Length: 317
Image (tube, rainbow, N blue to C red; front, side, top):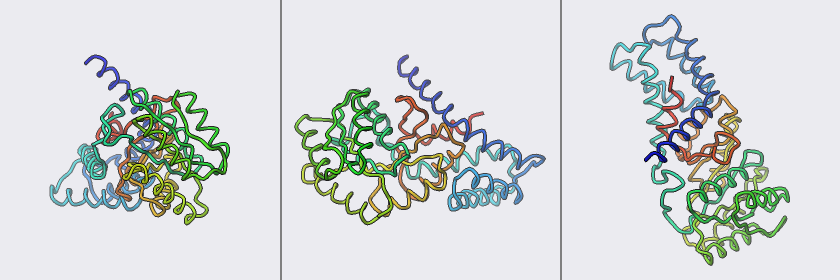
């Protein structure tokens, strides 16, 4: 019990530290907008709307939140400024939990399938390969066997980078080098995983969007060849997004969800940005659960996302 408490406390501290910039920015804006006010009126709601949009929650999601608060104001007639934080907190928690599945509670949780195949997508520069390395570390630390597949054969640097991560974490990798057929690498990776009874397979893919049709065809081909060996693979199509890019991350989500069936999100670099509100907007707009969040450069700084813990940390005094 003591060990569990220690790790829970450590995880909470990492989360609090990682959300510091978002929290400071959001609440300083909010405080300025309600100075001198005692009740929630139209002026306060206008200011709150502006604060949420400036925090990269996104227009569509912001209007949804404001509309819900307006309904509560109408119903309860009088809502004091002191109650606004709690109402806002409950609205954001509800939005995030609506699209969040709790079947994957943490890295040491039992896996739904074996091998559990995660196909990782996202543009170059968002921290895709680093996220794969950190995922490999966390799964291995939780006692699971892991295999990496270097299907981003478009850039030699991508294969090299993933190889470095495999050595750093101490997990095997299947690679055919630059310009190899990405689907062929994925097939070989799964074949190896099956022969070695591997728990988790993480497959990297090319992070280019200049030709959406090409990307779609490539990802479709990778899925088809994997399904010859594991009929329901991939179990997770994980889109990695850089939280610090704010609205650009939402645009990337739009393009990738059009190109393939994304069913999980990873938000990186939350510790270096005040735009953490983008998590709320992306989760709400695309109805896809945020599965992992990156809160720092250490391998232990990648966490399984918990909506309630995230909002509690965001609103903690």
